[in-house]
Length: 408
Image: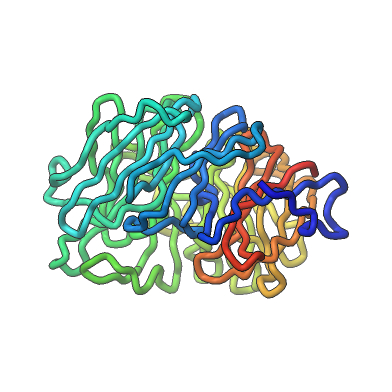
């Protein structure tokens, strides 16, 4: 860890502390901000070395997930050892790290689910997928770099490509792993699911604990190997909710009206059933933060879906310009990055009022991350579960590194 008072400026709050967590010649990064990588006490979390802001290369022998202990000088300890380690999730009780070892190839290979204690002991294999998924002819490949774990710690969801290398418009899909039974099932598949961003709801009631937030990238284009050439068509993506048995498909009321479009990042508002997305609008030209609740789907209509429940959180700003964000576990505060890109960006901390009703109730500017915003180099801020510490990426040193900020 290295203190970085030089990243604090005249507009930063007094008492702010900025810590650079990684400092190798290799790029290091936080895991994508929607990932469940914290222990519930906010003291330890997972990041990774030899990685970029959107994941890692499964063939990179230098890639490792690291455990960061914020109460022990932010000490970094490698917690994975295998080449191809990806898609980490910390169990809700903070005892285990689940992750996958990706040795897949289009139409073959194997995918292994592993579990390890957070002190690095007790590493075990939960199960291995080296045959078609049950009830299908599909073999998973192009494994998504993010998994998501249910609030009861019993199920993991992970998305993948389902092509065989010979089929045009082969599907993508979402797998759900039952940890106790060591089984897997495919619950969702189709040609528009190339960038699913699956996220289990953090609520603990029986129905909500089985709900998964998913991103539908309409009119995406890709080749037989799963290489995406067009991520989304003119109307953009929309966001849905599905139960982890494949039932009860619903819609979040965002985008798809020809003016508003989802930027591609959304997350749950803490442990509630409200979710938040970043949208862009063509007229006026803005980047807004909008919350909403799922409603019955009527054909991918986005914000035009009947019965829409939504709230423009950033409406008090004259020209909102927000991109990536995340809330604390209680859903009472939020950290976000903001443009303009050509000046290095900005980092803000907001408090949240009543769900579905209030705009941001207070705003605190934290700092300028001095990030280049180049491809694969995004700020991607997020909060510890208690909301007292924020984290971000930056390549201000010339190499992508992971940072922490506290004391505002």
